[in-house]
Length: 79
Image (tube, rainbow, N blue to C red; front, top):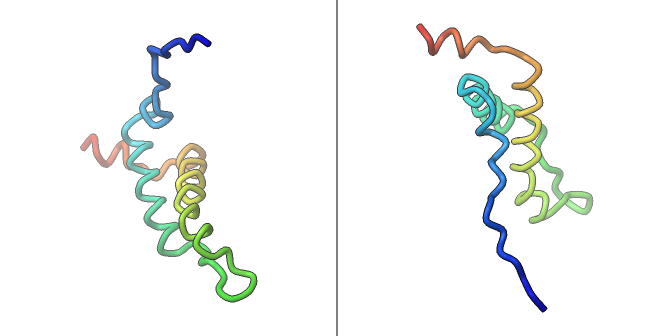
């Protein structure tokens, strides 16, 4: 069996977005962590898995929000 090496790595999705949008995404992530829905406790809670993977969900939600709305960080940083 022969295994070929892959020489090119995929670029991260955040590298293609402008820095102002990345800053907005990070800001929205922190706001969603603080204000967003909290995990359930008890029998219907997600347990340790929900705790571990909720950050990925928050990151994607923040990316979707940052892509659809402009908080004005680009003009603020440029000044």
